[in-house]
Amino acid sequence: MVICNTRFRIFQSLGYMSRHNLDCWHQKEYIGLGAAAHSYTDGVRYSNISNIKQYIECYEKNKQEDSIIIHEKQDKTSMAKEFILLALRTLDGCNKNDFYAKFNYDLEKGFKNEIEKLKKEGLIENTQSCIKLTNKGLDLANLVWEEFV
Image (tube, rainbow, N blue to C red; front, side):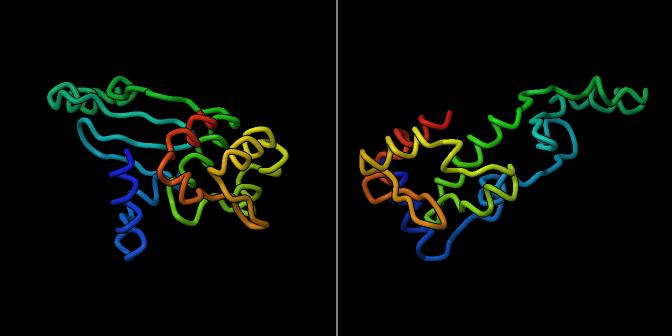
C-alpha cells in the first residue's frame, strides 16, 4: 500500500491526475451506456447486465429496468462518510465548505470523534478550511479511511 500511495503522491504533485478518478472522488454523477456499463446517480451505484443479448432484448421489449443491477443505495450518512474518505485520497483533502454545501452540516461536529482520534495519532491535519492527510497519514491512509467506512 505504501508503494501505491507514494506513486500516487508523485503523480499528483507533478500534475498527472486522472479526471475520471477525481470526478469519482468528488462524488460526481456519471451514467454508463451499454452492456456491463456502470453508473452513479442520486446516491445509487448500479450497472447494466453484462450479457449483451439480454441487454438488447430488455430494450427491445421496453423493460430497461430488467437490465439494471443495483449495487448500492446510499443514505445521507454513508454519502457523507464516503465524501470524506474519497476527498482524503487527494493531497488537497476534504474541504469543509464543500462538505457543508453538499450535506448542510458541519464536518467537525458530525465527525468530531473520528477527527480528534486521527489528529491525535498524527494521521490528519485539521486546518480552518480542510482536513487532509499528514505525511504519516499518506503512508497509513487505509487506517484513516477505515474511520469513515
